[in-house]
Length: 187
Image 1 (cartoon, rainbow, N blue to C red):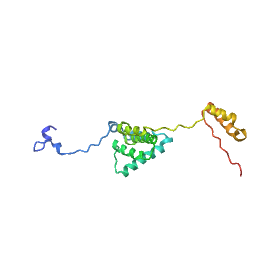
Image 2 (image 1 turned 60 degrees about the vertical axis):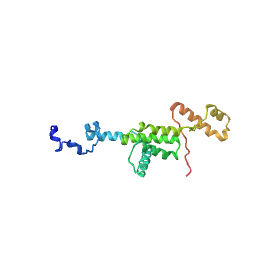
Image 3 (image 1 turned 180 degrees about the horizontal axis):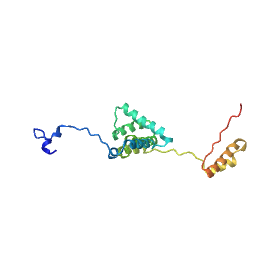
Image 4 (image 1 turned 30 degrees about the vertical axis):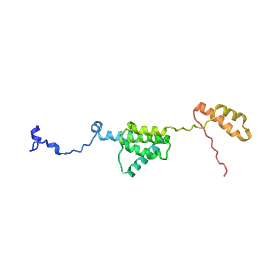
């Protein structure tokens, strides 16, 4: 069709008065058969490790529930700033970072949105981290274990000494910690 055929009677371009709703599909979606898209969807749904999946999905559900409560479907940086500001009222900065990491993964998988580019959100989380001191796990030093094994009375601590020694060698040679449990044999 040439240009004259699509002009309206008054000389304006015919398409000026028509609005189009553009549905964006990526080139990959347009060129990929539905069967392969389904397989890819199943693979992407299983990107979160099984051991963590339930916690990631729960964290994502908390976010989507908050979205519903706030009457928004947006995944904008402002939405995430508001959500994490809400969480910051009751959670420690380390927990905020953990939630950010889980939500970032789930949003990338489910919505194909990369929130790692949300610089204001990361700045907010970093700001909440200022002055936070992480708690150091209490562990025994080698000298403390040695002193316990030598000095603690066998009458009281023999089972602990045997268990500690056994686990020490199990960890050294197998990399596995064994935690003995008692069976109640009384009938």
